[in-house]
Amino acid sequence: MKAGWLWSGLLLILLLWLQHTLWFAPGGLAERHTLEQQLLQQRDLNRQLHTRNAALAAEVQDLKQGLNAVEERARLELGMLKAGEVFYQVLE
Image (cartoon, rainbow, N blue to C red; front, side, top):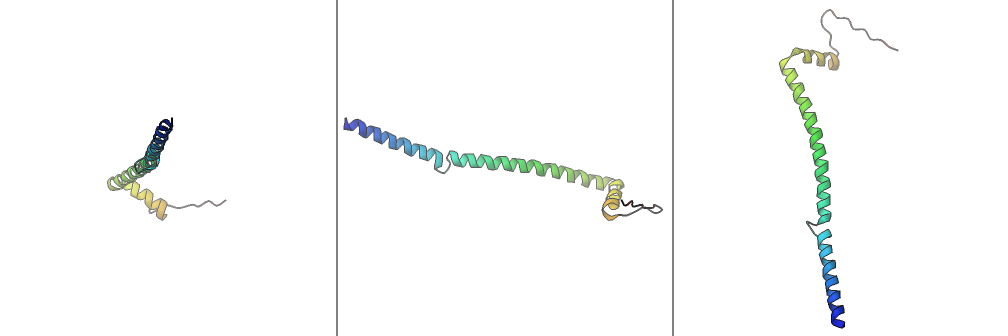
């Protein structure tokens, strides 16, 4: 009878040790979950950066090929006007 309790106790201790190893040891499920969350965040950031880079590349290409983009930037960012143009500012 005591041998049965001994084996049951040893098996319970073994089970608890295995569960602890599975969940909390390096490379366990807890670490895996953390790494998966970091991976999802990094993929989202990569998508955002890819979109931004594509927009910047398109703007660079436009600046290289045409003067319309250069003129637009000069008007919007520097407030420049063409010769003979008149600028009207309406205040409310």
